[in-house]
Image 1 (cartoon, rainbow, N blue to C red):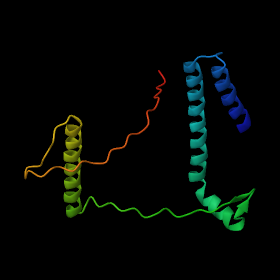
Image 2 (cartoon, rainbow, N blue to C red):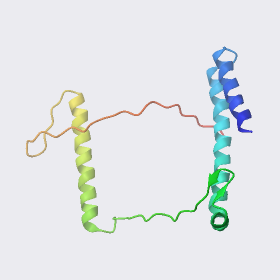
Image 3 (cartoon, helix red, strand yellow):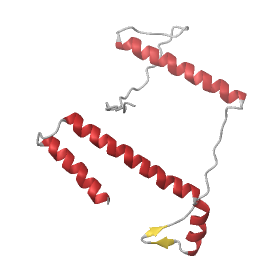
Image 4 (cartoon, rainbow, N blue to C red):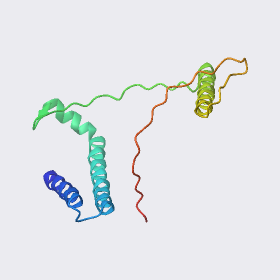
Length: 140
């Protein structure tokens, strides 16, 4: 089944490269397939989540099956610090500092030197850029 899907994708791209179909035709057909595959992955995830207890029981009896090692791990502990006033204060201060440094960077891009209220030069953040991406939205 997966080989057929991969062959379909390869064939579609090859048709585009040969000039038989447009770039947008190729893109939208691949996007339709991606959406279908995401739905399929969601079905798999839902099954694993719903049947987790049964999977855990079966894995105790048979921890390896069809070349897979199967185990169920407990969820990890998560911390939320938002109820700690000191943490909230520091978080606000960090966000203010980030905003000030971003503004300084924008000003420096325009050749303007910036300083804080004490006359100290504002340090500039390191900046990196994400790659551009193509966005598709299916019309309803």
